[in-house]
Image 1 (cartoon, rainbow, N blue to C red):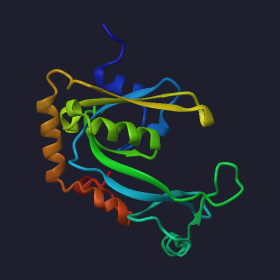
Image 2: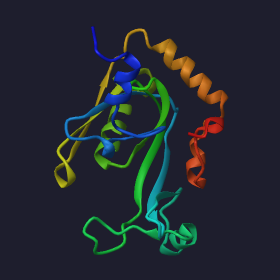
Image 3: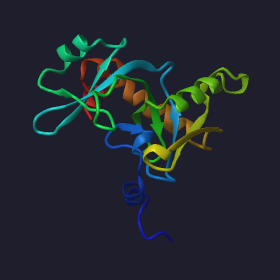
Image 4: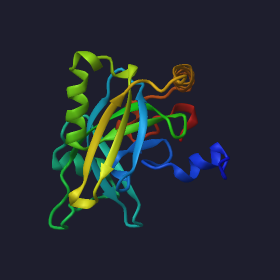
Length: 196
């Protein structure tokens, strides 16, 4: 018999994101998360990270690659983040987001993918006859290594047995609350009434 309840175990063992977001970059070496894609198509955008004088970090998203003047106009009191080496401003980074069912929390979350390798793998899978309907499959994203030696993988798998009803009900509830990925572009919560 497990020491922790199923709920407690999920809380202490969850990784890959905080709140309503999942991202591969938050995984530690050797960690992974499993999810099912819910959105018909992802939201595509460019992200610029800003930091205010109090040290608060915030993503600013643009539907097309922003110019330096676009960035300056949008950031307001925030300063554009420096690159990893600290030698220049960090360039806007292309990313995609989609709503997913997170198996760890059994909730709808936003999966943000900013790694080109993961995007390429997912796109290649979507163009394969076997995986052409991505929402019918489960996926696991894993990370090995840290910092500049990091590798990410995405592996498809069959839907976890007995979960389709739970996924459908959870997604239906999220949609009824007004979940909307487009809200990310204007800096608002994509979680509708929940406001996560």
